[in-house]
Length: 427
Image 1 (spheres, helix red, strand yellow):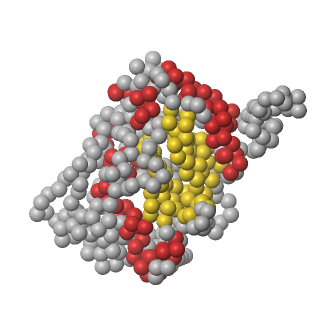
Image 2 (cartoon, rainbow, N blue to C red):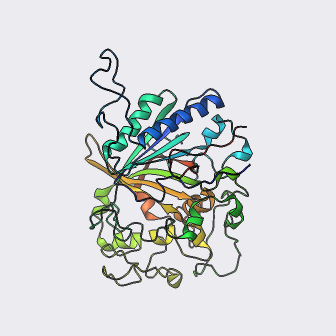
Image 3 (cartoon, rainbow, N blue to C red):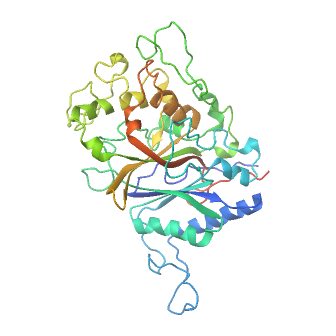
């Protein structure tokens, strides 16, 4: 039997639209057949949204019944979708409900382990069975997708959390610039991000290839007591003893799929804005105006440079706990642990406290264990990296986690039908 050609789902490497809504759902089904039926109904619904098809409603529609179409997009098919994408993913619980055999499940997928990540969600700790990332340049178009899911599938897909994000600021009109987009803390963001759309080597780190699982880095670097640190310091880092082992295999149907991590958080903007400029720059490890690393001139007109962190092993220029060092230390083999970040600043109003600010963090990778989870546990929150006693990333100390989850985003089986997400074979 010929294996169908697969492609990554839309919404991963396309141009990021202005607005993003990420919603996790519980899949209410009493048996695998019911779970698969619910997802097929979702597929049909998404096909309508992604083809600008509305439910038939006219002046002749029955007045004693609710209107078939909610109406915020009007009642005429073919409306402008404003670059709408809908990315579909499954949490580990969904594979139980779908009746997938252990061998046919994404091998690196678990429910998000909040305690191990040193996070305590304030909204909900529930991971969710299904996730939808809905992105569009129109809030109305994105809202319509989620509203239609609630209206037509609300009995089988029950929302457990929703996060809303809005694109980073850039001085250029049109699409956000990788070189200029700024986070709400005021610093350039994404300057060293992967580029899987244009770089095959980067795509290799983002999408699953069952034939290449042997390329994964180990669960933990091999520690050699008494040997010089690979990061150039006087003492080697110490890593948590319970880092998860990466998968030794992946099922064939997962090719061109990817693992997705979502983490929503708020930060105290008032306290951050009150900190001295130099303190902010040492916390991040970059100059605020130019975005250049601290070991390069603060020149907004120069091409973006790479920090020489190994040449500054004592932290004399870039502090040992600076964000750039704790998230991407650029040591031997570290390049294979990078993730593709596709987050959005998070903004929301409150009743009494003014505007809430934070981050809708979304990332994709070929694993969770060797990428996001390793970065978080072995580097970012590890007080003994890159040297014993360094302390965690100070940016983690100023944010308050809301919710999030781990998901697997299946491949699409037809590049012209973005709703054609694959599902695991039935047992």
